[in-house]
Length: 449
Image (cartoon, rainbow, N blue to C red; front, side, top):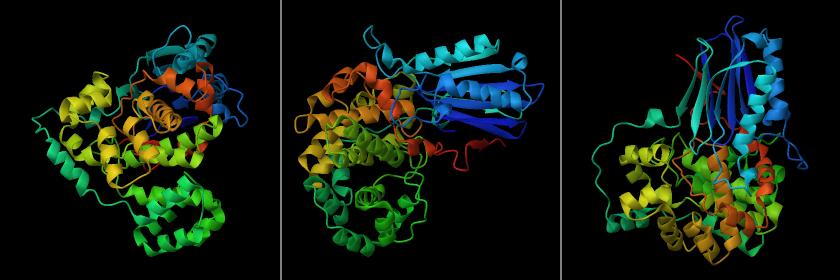
């Protein structure tokens, strides 16, 4: 279930699940009344941004509503049992950056409310840097906290390390980027539009055309009227959004739909790229440090190197899972240890073969170490921050362990202070959290048996 929501239910044959990083999840149940539920909290309290989220997003407003809903369904606070999980750190916390411990503050508010209402806490696992999955079995009222991806991690086996020439061959084997995508990228970079030309090219490519229509009707755009043609999309969504959707649809075919390799779920790599693009666009508009359209494109392309290395990660998945999810090793370090090269380096080579603009190549190459960017540093810092936000607040898409050493520097580079970090979390587009975790394709609840 996504951030900013809760579910209350009577006894049934289902499991509720929340995938948690910095967010905090709480399960509550009254075994006597056979009523329980789960809430997924984003932030400790409202930040005062112009368009606040619904009350359920915040611990101060959403958690009391959750308890009230349970009581209205027949539960009594004296019989409730609580389980708390999540609240991972965004990055290293110092005396000057208390604001970065968002999950810790959310947890403290939850615990304070539980004490005030004398609700018993049966299990708590919060803090640290790790992501987890909180589940509540509505049939047995059992709550569990497990690492994300633990059920994907088979025993380790021998792995043949790819040579540099093999990786080079994989880079050259990747299909050329579609011409319509290149045209849109040039239009975005040069700030001019000839939508008639773009629409005509999209119509001629059946695969991209179908992909554009699917994305137009997805939860990320959620139009009030169903889109059934490119012309209809242009009328309903406007030129700016259609440009973004065209390049997104054109690039989607490069990302594997399997739940193997870097992805922790079906379509995880593309879903992560899409949400990073949307958050980078929002941050660019908020800070004024880059064109929102260019930030969107850079976010969409930042992990393109994973397309090349994905097949090797699939073969060595147990190694990567252990290194990143158990030992807490940064992903690029794990890649270097096994491949001798990282996905940002491979992504830069691939983007050079596609003749992408230099500012995009530079951002792809340095999005894990934004302080090394030289072409348009602010753009790289924005993508790094968007990537970090999504790795902490929408977990479970892919094997990502982002180094947070550059967090303070990146905030400073785009004109933000640590005290404003909760505000940029609150600016994450609401539509991102309308998406359920991809494994639970049929809704917020996972079938139990």
